Amino acid sequence: MLEHAREAVKIAHGRSRQDLGNDRMFNLAETRLLEIIGEAARRVPIDYQLEHPEIPWSQIIGLRNRLIHGYDAIDFDILWAIIQNDMPQLIKQLEDIL
Image 1 (spheres, rainbow, N blue to C red):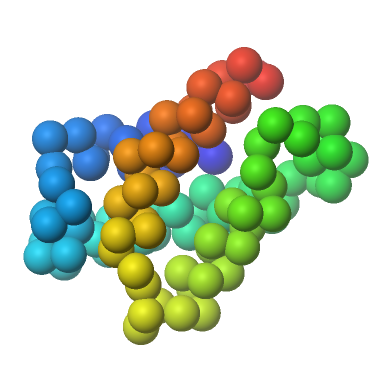
Image 2: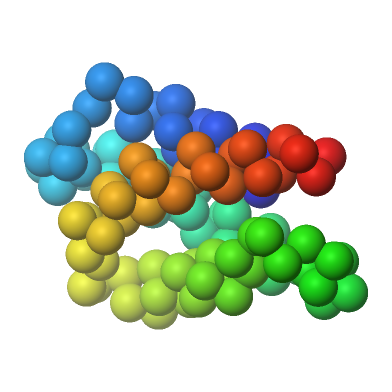
Protein backbone atom coordinates (compact mmCIF):
# COMPACT_ATOMS: atom_id res chain seq x y z
CA MET A 1 0.00 0.00 0.00
CA LEU A 2 2.73 2.41 0.99
CA GLU A 3 4.78 1.95 -2.16
CA HIS A 4 1.81 2.48 -4.45
CA ALA A 5 0.51 5.46 -2.47
CA ARG A 6 3.91 7.09 -2.77
CA GLU A 7 3.95 6.40 -6.49
CA ALA A 8 0.47 7.88 -6.97
CA VAL A 9 1.56 11.11 -5.28
CA LYS A 10 4.88 11.17 -7.10
CA ILE A 11 3.46 10.88 -10.60
CA ALA A 12 0.82 13.52 -9.80
CA HIS A 13 3.48 16.01 -8.70
CA GLY A 14 3.53 18.97 -11.06
CA ARG A 15 0.38 17.79 -12.79
CA SER A 16 -3.12 19.28 -12.64
CA ARG A 17 -6.66 18.03 -12.34
CA GLN A 18 -7.07 18.85 -16.02
CA ASP A 19 -4.17 16.55 -16.85
CA LEU A 20 -6.00 13.74 -15.11
CA GLY A 21 -8.98 14.19 -17.39
CA ASN A 22 -7.04 14.83 -20.57
CA ASP A 23 -4.06 12.48 -20.34
CA ARG A 24 -5.29 8.92 -20.74
CA MET A 25 -2.02 7.32 -19.64
CA PHE A 26 -1.92 9.49 -16.52
CA ASN A 27 -5.50 8.69 -15.50
CA LEU A 28 -5.02 4.99 -16.21
CA ALA A 29 -1.86 4.95 -14.09
CA GLU A 30 -3.48 6.78 -11.17
CA THR A 31 -6.62 4.67 -11.34
CA ARG A 32 -4.59 1.47 -11.36
CA LEU A 33 -2.43 2.57 -8.43
CA LEU A 34 -5.52 3.32 -6.35
CA GLU A 35 -7.02 -0.03 -7.33
CA ILE A 36 -3.86 -1.77 -6.12
CA ILE A 37 -3.89 0.16 -2.84
CA GLY A 38 -7.50 -0.94 -2.31
CA GLU A 39 -6.75 -4.55 -3.15
CA ALA A 40 -3.79 -4.56 -0.77
CA ALA A 41 -6.00 -3.07 1.96
CA ARG A 42 -8.59 -5.77 1.34
CA ARG A 43 -5.94 -8.41 1.96
CA VAL A 44 -4.90 -7.00 5.34
CA PRO A 45 -6.28 -9.29 8.05
CA ILE A 46 -9.30 -7.84 9.85
CA ASP A 47 -7.61 -8.09 13.25
CA TYR A 48 -4.74 -5.94 11.97
CA GLN A 49 -7.23 -3.47 10.50
CA LEU A 50 -8.93 -3.25 13.90
CA GLU A 51 -5.57 -2.55 15.56
CA HIS A 52 -5.12 0.44 13.22
CA PRO A 53 -8.45 2.28 13.04
CA GLU A 54 -6.66 5.45 11.92
CA ILE A 55 -6.46 3.91 8.45
CA PRO A 56 -9.80 4.24 6.62
CA TRP A 57 -9.76 0.60 5.51
CA SER A 58 -13.38 0.37 4.38
CA GLN A 59 -13.14 3.59 2.37
CA ILE A 60 -9.95 2.44 0.65
CA ILE A 61 -11.47 -0.93 -0.16
CA GLY A 62 -14.71 0.72 -1.26
CA LEU A 63 -12.79 3.00 -3.62
CA ARG A 64 -11.12 -0.04 -5.15
CA ASN A 65 -14.52 -1.63 -5.73
CA ARG A 66 -15.92 1.52 -7.32
CA LEU A 67 -12.91 1.85 -9.62
CA ILE A 68 -12.99 -1.81 -10.66
CA HIS A 69 -16.74 -2.10 -11.17
CA GLY A 70 -17.55 1.48 -12.15
CA TYR A 71 -14.63 2.03 -14.49
CA ASP A 72 -16.93 3.72 -17.00
CA ALA A 73 -18.09 6.37 -14.53
CA ILE A 74 -14.96 7.52 -12.68
CA ASP A 75 -15.28 11.02 -11.24
CA PHE A 76 -11.87 12.56 -11.84
CA ASP A 77 -12.60 15.41 -9.43
CA ILE A 78 -12.95 12.88 -6.62
CA LEU A 79 -9.95 10.88 -7.80
CA TRP A 80 -7.83 14.04 -7.90
CA ALA A 81 -8.96 15.08 -4.41
CA ILE A 82 -8.01 11.64 -3.08
CA ILE A 83 -4.57 11.82 -4.66
CA GLN A 84 -3.93 15.37 -3.45
CA ASN A 85 -5.57 15.28 -0.02
CA ASP A 86 -5.86 11.71 1.20
CA MET A 87 -2.78 9.97 -0.17
CA PRO A 88 -0.21 12.13 1.68
CA GLN A 89 -2.03 11.45 4.95
CA LEU A 90 -2.27 7.73 4.20
CA ILE A 91 1.46 7.64 3.43
CA LYS A 92 2.22 9.22 6.80
CA GLN A 93 -0.08 6.82 8.63
CA LEU A 94 1.44 3.80 6.93
CA GLU A 95 4.96 5.01 7.61
CA ASP A 96 4.07 5.42 11.30
CA ILE A 97 2.69 1.87 11.45
CA LEU A 98 5.64 0.34 9.64
